[in-house]
Length: 419
Image (cartoon, rainbow, N blue to C red; front, side):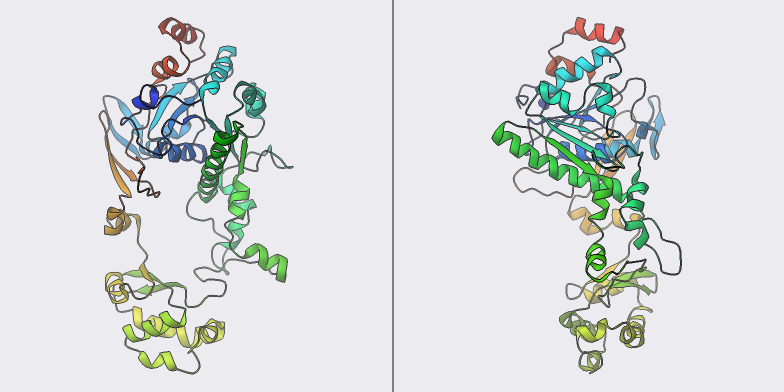
């Protein structure tokens, strides 16, 4: 059962009633930090009614993460938290209390999805795990994001993003061959698990809508990172090779890496015969396209040939030109991209054209510029400009609409410390 779009709490979401494709889908979000909140945020951007549930005495500690919006009479508000929790209702429930457990069960009867990112077994220990909640609502899609998954010998191990990068193989492959391996410079374990969780949730929702049966969506950070290792698994299983750090190089494609220029670095990937010939013409070396030692892609892939013949040419082409000049020369003809820092990315005209930096005004805290939604839907566009809730901000609204509680019932729960 979903809330009626036009009369339920979906119509009272921060920012207004969403026209998104998940309009009317109700999501209970019992997550913290990034992997879970980002998953439910993407669902919210797509139009779902997402209710962020926090412990009233131990809320999501990402609320204390920098950067903070300008401090004022209302105190501080985390821009980090706001970015990953936009478009959500804020509700507090203490699941350690009997009343809190019963309240979650009641909410689950009216929800379509529940997302949690606790260590496996935690929700079961609280008495509100998947097996319990499916009895309350057989249609419920229960999405669990964890470090190592709900099964296997590592299932109970504590894990962070770095745990997934370490045990999923990615850390061992990143960096330079003459140095220790380096972690990927973002929380790729969290973020990849988020994306797979969204995909799994949407697939399970479709099944539930057709069959009336919900299911457990079990997503592991370790599994997610492993799936990002490109050809590493088959290189080992087929040839016995264990890939190590390659720096900015590709395992076999050349030229396809980072090159210095006058004011920074560019990526150049003109490795096919078509792109190589065009590059030779654009950069004033047309004779190289027909040079018998480097006139085919296979010849340019040979490491010794690449180092002796190709790399010096690329340095000559790029070293005295700026990033902007090189991008102008390459234009729409060959793959060449400036390596941009975040300041340059935020001001990039392509990013602006794609609405990937959005401005949101928090009345008590000021303006927040954050990333938008990379999902572009022609008929039901995403809505990334909603506000993130303060702790328990919409508790009364949610419990009235979704749990059919009146003021007296809500006050009783507050008195007992359940909310």
